[in-house]
Image 1 (cartoon, one colour):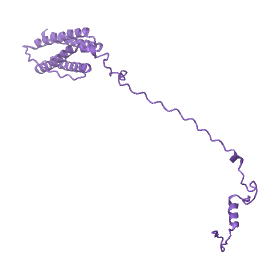
Image 2 (tube, rainbow, N blue to C red; image 1 turned 180 degrees about the horizontal axis):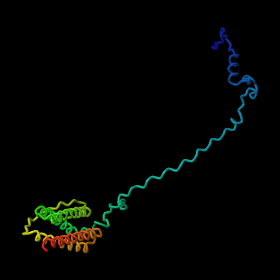
Image 3 (spheres, rainbow, N blue to C red; image 1 turned 90 degrees about the horizontal axis):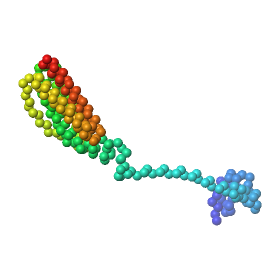
Image 4 (cartoon, one colour; image 1 turned 135 degrees about the vertical axis):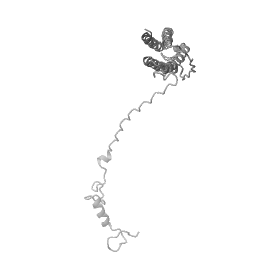
Length: 228
């Protein structure tokens, strides 16, 4: 076999082992690779090689996070306020008073327009202010009744209002009509509150009854100033 190692001289047909010696001295100085004693040549296995270090057991994996509980399809929203199929207020019990509520709503809207029209025609400033305030309060009451209707049914109510063109010979006669209307509204609201089985609807009707009686008292006081 031809020698392929070069050392700056003409290649020899035999291996030049001096080159190997130089390489070996760089790798493992102080050892003889050609010694017949493996221990002298440093070729024996070290105690660590004879007794390899056992592999370190891996740390136990952390327990996997528990998966979230599946959402209940039926009854899962029962704990959310307002999501009950039959809530404690404005629910099934309130439907018994639904027609009464619709009647009050139409009445308040019609009376609000009537009072506003009467306020525009009278020349008495005190009476005009009272009638404008009454019209505004009636519109507010109508909005509350409309909201109650939506809470009960889940639908918006669009009342068909027809306003009668009433004519009075004098302002005292118009105020007399307003007084009786307010007093009757207070009585009807109070009756509806007593007959309703829904606690929230009872409070709403009772509050509107008090407002109607208060307006009736204001009309009575104004009427006394006009005729006495």
